[in-house]
Amino acid sequence: MYNIVERGGRPIIMTHIGRPYDKKTKTITARTEDSVDAVVRYLQRKLRIKFAVPQFHVNGTEGILDIDTSINWLIQDLRNRRIGGIYLPNTRWFAGEEDKGEKLERFVVQLAGLADVFVNDAFGSWQSHASTYHIAKLLPSYAGLSLQDELSHVKLILNPDRPFVAIVAGAKYDTKIGPLTEMYKKVDHLILGGVMYNTYLCAKYGIRIKGVEESDIELAKGLVDQDKLHKKIVELPFLIESDTLDGRIEGRYRKISSKEFTSGGEYKYVVDVDPASFESEDLVQTIGQARTIFVNAVMGLMPQFWRGTSKMDEVIDLNSSAQKFFGGGDTLQEFKSLHPKLYHEALHSAKYYLFTGGGTVLKVIEEGDPYGLDIVKALIENKQSYSDCSRAQAAHSYHHNKTN
Image (cartoon, rainbow, N blue to C red; front, side):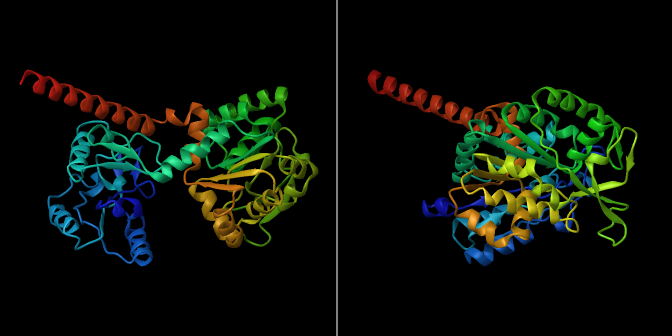
């Protein structure tokens, strides 16, 4: 934003927050907690400039159908420097943002009508949505400075110094199977956490853990078979089992060991990795000898079960020679919350790099090319398109002058 304003630009900012669109019911819920108001307050406090947030009608569960023409008054104020910027409502509140048909087309045209240039600086938003992909077909479009920087650094994960260790956790297994399969091929060691790890344990040991779906266990059996041959997965031997997901209730959670697993065993919710796991010989050696470490992981059910994640961060930091990459909103939020001093040191350390989108890094690994992301290809195609237009105009001008 500083760069744009310094060069005389007037910013109209858009972003998405949360997941207000329900893919099953195809409805949008515009909740106050998903509004951009908190972001705007932060920017106004930090930058000491005024941002205007236009108010558009939310049409029930359809969301915002159109960008109201009342925004033209704000654009006039922006051009005349009476306000510092315009911040659009959560883009996922708009009916056209994730649509595939007429609503998308109308929304993209309306977006493009607001500005002269589009700058994509959202590495974490790799999906082909209206505000990240389709708009690049209608306006001269560029990669923002942060997007350029993150694309440059993700290449270091595709071509890492070895040994390369990845630590990946997630609440769902089926949505991560593609990136996880490609990740497995590229790493020297893989450490899993969360429901993803629970699913793997069920598939390997023939046990059942509450909350793990049978279909996911079947998918995980492929990874188990793969690891029998390559032996890349380093297990976390000590876990926390809880009778409930309602919190850390004394007497209702306990430490368990994977060494005790036997086929047919049934367990309640596994909600965290016990810190002792990161003190085991295998884990200490694996992380301590790594030259590249990628982390997209929160190990426990936050905020009550945080000890496993906290210990993980501490053990990773002990490896002062490794290049450490952390990625993902939840990963960075918990890193900052659990270790605020270390987090701020990491922001300025050459040995750390913090990606804004962990899911995007996984997508890049799956694609095998940072420039294979649809949002990046759209920018490349946009540049080519406008370059062709410029050459055509120059040729036409030359021909016109010559004939005269």
